[in-house]
Image (tube, rainbow over all chains, first blue to last red; front, side, top):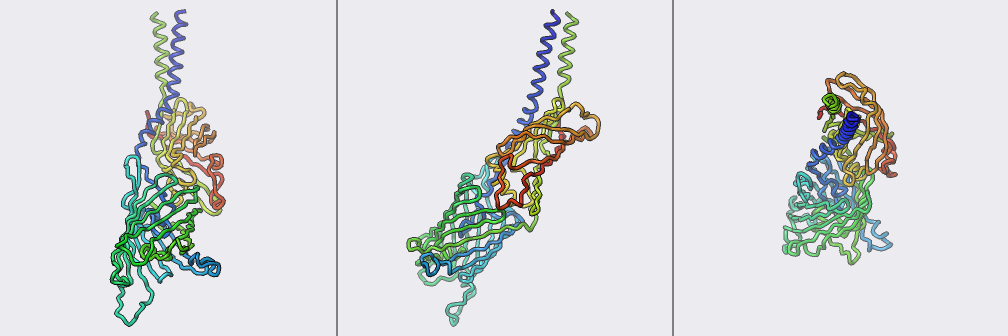
Length: 298
Length: 183
């Protein structure tokens, strides 16, 4: 009897031991998981592509990736049925962007509007992240140079090549608030070597604001507005306001939008917009973006 | 009295002596591969946590979905944003058991074919999985390896019509984890 009691205690004890062993594996996994938990989680895909509507977003193309961009802006919608609501007219920009590293990209393009060539680089200075490293914003810097190659209006005058150039410097400050919502601010400084009238400033300042709201996994609604400071803008220009959709499929992003800006280079849409939404000076347009991986990613 | 004490001591000691080895690693490798006529998609995750209990046969894996790296940056972005939705479902895990674990002798080098059954949790869905694999013992270290197929639809991972020909309905998962640590 004495022995039976002892065996019973031993049996219970070994059963308890065994179930403790069974707990161990999950406990070890939990321990390992908490060990590696302190990593930095960087925000990715703040926007679906490197352009919002007309202007840049904080997104870069990846290293070794080339992004081919074809953009169209049609004529004014208030042209009426005769002009097929603007579809009879179109200006086009084709551009090639390339990622040198994951933080530095370059691009060139040419627009039919005013026969403008443009070139830029974009460098990501800060990345939004949480976890071990906390950074609430993504910050990028984009300088653009635009060259208007239309023949000079008055060939008899002394015309300078440098008169064709406009330089734009942008800081892009963006934040991904959630999977669906991202916003960015775009303070912009533009320097025009040549202006039309003496009264106009050569140094122009604008503040852009834009954002996107995802409507589904692959479709988002975008808006973009560039407000020009009253003393630092060209006369008789309006502020660029654009609204559109991004549709993403496999390797393409299609952007369809309405904008009051006819041009697609920074100098034209930020500082030379003359369209008035109230009057229906609205251009329907689209951007198509196609990425090709041509370099090595890692 | 003395004899019964002795018996109890032996029983208790034999139970504690059987305290098993738990083998683990923080850098296991799990990759997946999808092959279609249009395109091959391949990604690897080198930061897989794996634990094997050599007494009970319990085998567990845990990984961060963001740890899967692709050759194409855009593919990686789409995988995280649209397919695995790694912000909603940051981890994928497996909790299962190796059948007949006692047949594996860690002191003897060799390749032991094994059958593993358990629950795979991915994209918020848990499904029972059975797979064949190998546990290879070399120099006291065990490597768990296996190749098995997984149907994306089973885990609510939708393939949009536009890329139906680029992504296979069933993809191959390959596991290769060397359990070089023990406790």
